[in-house]
Amino acid sequence: MDRLMEGLLLSDFGNIPVKEIAAVLPCYHNEGGNATEMVFINDQPAVIHRTVKTVIKNLARTCTVDLKAAREKYGEMLGCKRAVPLVLAPEMIFMVVKVRETISRNDASRGYINYFAVTDATKTEEGTCSKVVLKNGREVTCYHSIRNLNNHIRNCHYIHQMILKETGGADNFSLDYLAHPATKGDIALVLKELRELKEKL
Image 1: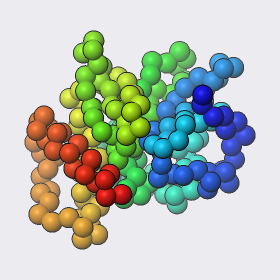
Image 2: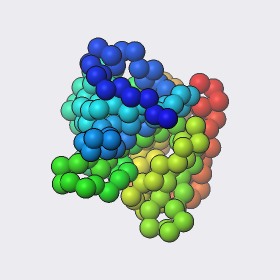
Image 3: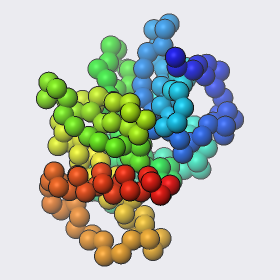
Image 4: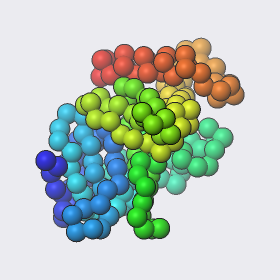
């Protein structure tokens, strides 16, 4: 059963094992309002009676990240303005994807999935959506085509490689990486590198 974090304050976020977060997902709590499900890699998920927007804002403060500046920086790096990956740290990059159909117009539909917690990305059985498999075995349905989802993964991979390049941790990385469509081979390679990286962490 999910744990409840009903009265979560900004100061409480310092006690959350941030690097263990696999996903931050919008959900509805029992009383019918909006809440956030925080999925952990090695622990049970927790339901926070706060919106995803508030939770992300507080997590960013905890990690001393300026959300606006980060979106501008990485959006410019990717050449896009929408669904820019959220970078809280070099090893904490979240892709922003639609994870639910909403009831009300003001309900959040987008969730944040930790790139480093993803082990696989596939089509759903119906083929109209896609899903990611997290390191803890949890599957999250994404309301995107598999091609679109793979591009989200690829963008996170690109940002991670650029961060490594900036810090001297990557060699021979091509700056025109995003100029070509992602192939199945590209994504397979990214997922392979991701699994190898997880084994080292």
